Length: 191
Image 1 (cartoon, one colour):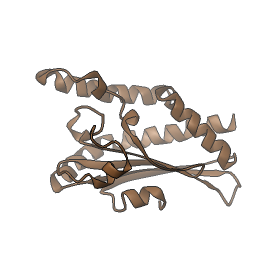
Image 2 (cartoon, helix red, strand yellow):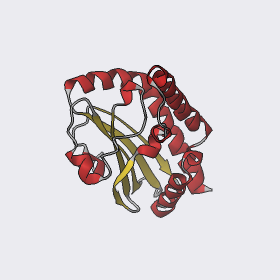
Image 3 (cartoon, helix red, strand yellow):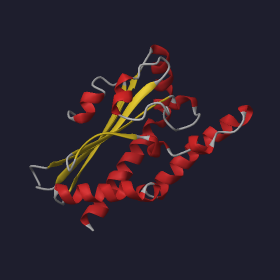
Image 4 (spheres, rainbow, N blue to C red):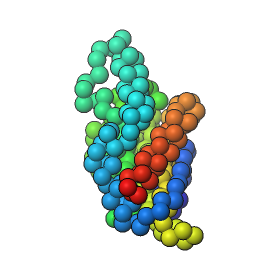
């Protein structure tokens, strides 16, 4: 997908793309997406909340040998994504820098607080990821084509190998989350 996400992570090591056509105008679908984002975990649905809770619990179990994970570091991964770019009502891109494959805290690097820090970050052993939503008029139906894309750029070979193992494990669940999210967006936009 071209657009804002492609300029932030032009050559991802890992990624996924999902889409849906919703029989509603772009502005209505954008508004429904904004409502879902405002609702936080409640906007994503119960199964998505369960998947994030499992991820959080795995991180807590892993940390038992070395102390506890501070509460601010056990946020849902989706809550850790920073708004990097937005062109209402056409596209929004969020991003995060982390080491998700360690099953440690899901939160991103606290020193990456915006677009400038995201683009400049280049520390080995980490990866940068974007999550984007793009809304365009579907020429065939007149509705809105919504494309969600995840793009991950690893900053060295070790991170790429570790992320590859992690991606094989979570990739199917990530795809499921995206498809469910698009289904909930469709229901909300046409309600």
